[in-house]
Length: 201
Image (cartoon, rainbow, N blue to C red; front, side, top):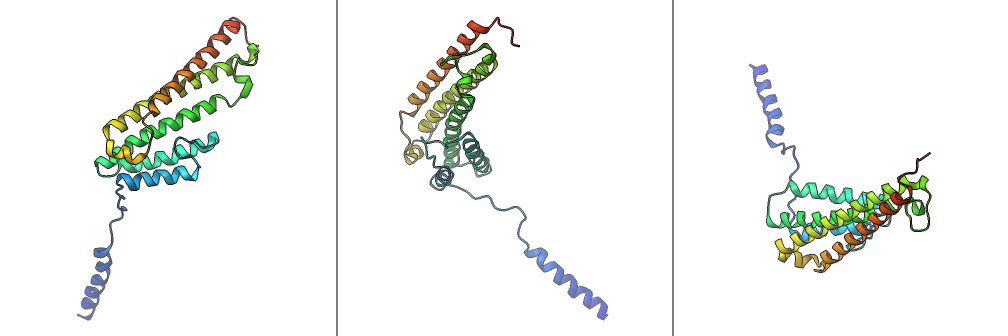
């Protein structure tokens, strides 16, 4: 009988922690637009790159992109509120603008070897064509950034007002895209004209 009583007491002791144990999944923090924008600014400040400023190096741009993307994914796990949608729309723009600059800087990483501007040799044709292609991708990213900006501005006017972004930004981004695409085509056209039939040895 004493053994049965001891087992009963032991089962109660073991049961209490199980009943009081918290759920294993951590609660997802719900951001409104103000607090979410604050989190984005913290990431930007860490790189001294509050828009329209950008991080200085390619690696810093990639690191900032990764951190913003992680927050972007976190927002997708929130409740589907208007503020959540506005934050996601803001980040669609911010990430595309960041990618515009990262790709452009990447296209320039070989310096004079990657451009026809200061004279060139046909042996540099693959490098020049690669740089031109990446520059064209940068133009695509700038156009996406302009479209995302307009969607954010028109879709969430009250949140847009809090963001303190400049309404002329899409015009500037599209102008940037046009210049990048023009330069890309010029590089490709020039090197192909002079070296297209030259066998690379």
